[in-house]
Length: 303
Image 1 (cartoon, rainbow, N blue to C red):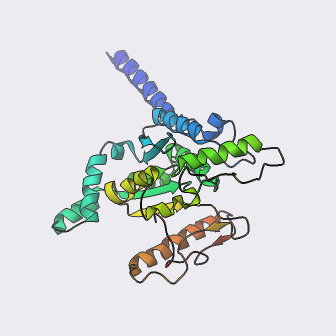
Image 2: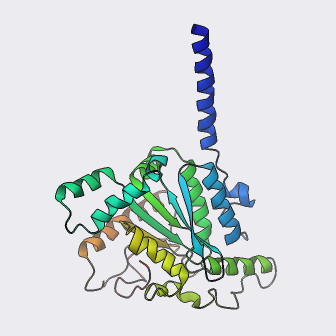
Image 3: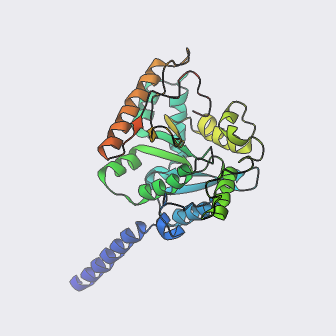
């Protein structure tokens, strides 16, 4: 009997080790695409990025990929839900708690306390709404892999205490146009030439401004996440700085702010931005600026 239990223990232990190793065996973007995200003269286009996200969805229990539907040009619009397996298994419960916090009218204080205690922060990040800012959708793939494979204390706290919702390309149509054009011309005299047509079938560069009217189907998908389904506590729309200014821009925007702006939200952005800038500069990411260029009065877009 002792030998039997010993053999069962060995088999179980081996199975647990194998399962743990497999759980972390998530294909990296470099393995999938054949180059690192951000490598010179290399860009991953949207159809292949969709394949990559569907692959890691099969490999990791930290991610749930949702195809929200087709864009104007028929490409998938994805939302990526990233958290612990336990949190992903209770999305309906997390949403119900969040709904109470978003609109607490008629909700008792004890219910609000329960929601705060038992739910997580909802954090939405979107990438590539201006598709000639090519870095953002590439960054998304690298960041997703990071969140699916890291097990350090900081990452485990992020996974445990937040539900991250990624919009890995807010304008998939434009992302594909820009990358296809570049890949056709890379290595030629036209390598740095801009796309010779609008990078959206209908509204060109003003994809971000479509937040005002929400005419485009991609805007509707984003608005559904931001304003209907989830109403996140935190949202950042990743853009790319131009070639003739600071390398990195972080919150807050420059003053003045709109008269209806909440002063507490404004100060929170100050606080967030200071922490982001500090961490970036500690890690050698120089050229960080905030409180300039973009004002809290005139900014238009989803955020």
